[in-house]
Image (cartoon, rainbow, N blue to C red):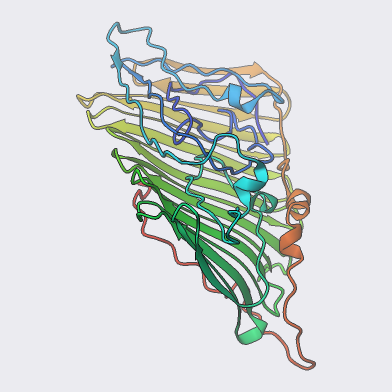
Amino acid sequence: MAASSRGFATQFDFRLRRFAFHNPPHRSNNGLELRKRRRLSFEADRVGVSRVGCCCSDSVVPIRRATRPGKSVEKAEEWRFDLKKSPRRVRIQASPALPFASPQSRFVSKQEKYYPRCTPRSSGPQSRDSPPKRDTGIANEKDWGISLLNGNVNESGTNEDGSTWYRESGDDLGENGFRCRWTRMGGRSHDGSSEWKETWWEKSDWTGYKELGVEKSGRNAEGDSWWETWQEVLHQDEWSNLARIERSAQKQAKSGSENAGWYEKWWEKYDAKGWTEKGAHKYGRLNEQSWWEKWGEHYDGRGSVLKWTDKWAETELGTKWGDKWEEKFFAGIGSRQGETWHVSPSGERWSRTWGEEHFGNGKVHKYGKSTTGESWDIVVDEETYYEAEPHYGWADVVGDSSQLLSIQPRERPPGVYPNLEFGSTPPIEEPPEEFPPQ
């Protein structure tokens, strides 16, 4: 769902490239849907942040550009300050950051990126010490290349360059038909300066619960460290008895040479009747600057849609700025409201609040005010673009979850019934959050 409008909002010039901070969530200011498919890939070359540009003033005039349905979301998401009322201008720059160097070649094949690579004299996987890219959402299962080993495997070896590797696999059984097949692999350089670890698993039990997952972590010679996990789950909803698929991803990375890093958590939930929930929480730091971002979407499958975004940033000098909005619609009728704000190092605050009421008949009531004294309250003729269903929904996620659906549970003996405690498998252990969202 999206409501197109030429009302007020804001954009900041907060463009950070490549590794950590280059994209706000792929949504326009007026709520265009998250991009249908995002691929998680690993960078094999030197990754860095070019700069942060932010123009700060005691009087900041936010500019919002209208976005029409079908236009590129990336083009629509432009953040900037338009300083028209004050000649004072502060430029904050930071470059470069988060080098995350990797010995891998820039030109490696897709298969080499996602599958174990072997030396001519060894059957063991070689180093995969590239950090994840930020703001890439939840990857589809085919992009992870999960290939579990059969049986119990426990092997290790040494590569020609002196690096070591190991590979293990197992099949754990438990109550209620629980089964977990897993494969773990890892390695380290000859001098111990870099290391990596990956674990793949699939789980099932007699309730119909199925889970596919990956966890990866590593550290390179420059001291950069990272961790990420991805999970895909099929289960029956406890209240509605509908089949549900849930996907989630968590990622974090930290620079070994600077006070810089990032953390993000993504989730998507779908059921067979069209109920859908999506969201993300993100946090990042680049030396003296920090930023946070949260957004969510909820489709009830019957035409009601809720979307919201809240993002803000600050510097150690005391400058703070942010933007948030929320929209609720049903059958083309709904409302939108938001706020843009800025706080100067001296504590002076500027803000602008705005709202829209869409009546479903082409009439839109727009209103708002700011701390500088401006205000508006008008009714205009304006078509509202309304999308009641996510363009990536239940049918799409089922089509992209073939490996999850193909997990074979243990055979259930006659007369044995499962304990219907859905989703009772314990969650994976998470590392301490070095960059907790605030």
